[in-house]
Image 1 (cartoon, rainbow, N blue to C red):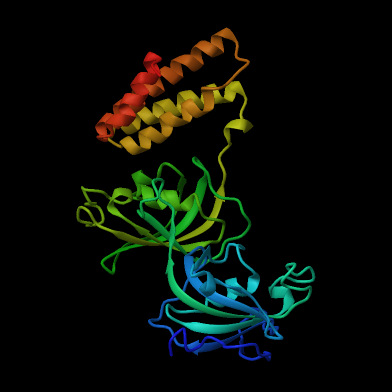
Image 2: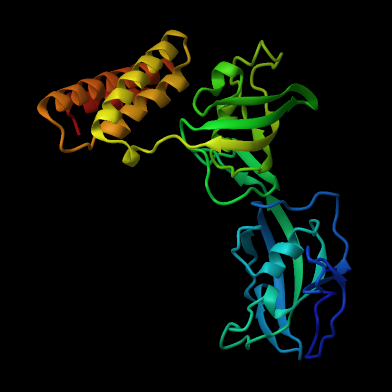
Length: 345
């Protein structure tokens, strides 16, 4: 059956039909499959999904249709961007599937409705076709280098920041071979020394407590062009990690520290960055030196002595950042920091 074949012609009334797919089992969302999808995979929380849909009231009045607009609707699943019924129903679909979703008001627009087309306390019927879904891109450059798919939604909204102490369980695999599985506790930004690639640390900073996720990592954010002798990973390998964030303790943010604390921490992270540089761990060194600039560049109300210390730390951090970027082959970054030191625009 094609999408055209399952289109409803004319106006008709609907009845409550389909399987109850609500987590509570309260009959609030009913699903009736009109056309089976392909494969076994279904969207996960955070995936970007693309659908066509038509919506009716129970008396057959059509109130919306992406098909008539000839424009597929895209949203992030499980993020509250759509009505509850959609987050529930689309998570049960396969690519190519067409289904009818009947939803009670508490899973739709509730007592307020959505004037002028949807009255208060309206039961709605949707026909939905799933075309595509993709994991969430967490890479800094949005280049698809770090893709997350959430298996278990976490608790609350807080996430680890740079310097947070995290406790995780991770399982890394390459070409279906598990090369690393262990429990770890470490400071975010220090993972490389434990064999944790940058892509994993980036993903962890987007996770909530108790969240479990699958993370797909391209070489740029994994073990790069050198691979990993420790884990027998060849150069240019794409990696797959299963991560559970068991707990974390956030590091102090800049606004939570006074000037004295920032200067003290600045000296410590400068020394740490220098050690990373000596160990050829340039990415980790960059993280440390950037902290100094973030903490002190716009700090005001310093005494003359504190101001001199701050300027000295910022100068050292900027020069060291330029050196790190040169080592990493990032010449634009090196030039930017050199210009900053010279006071050039």
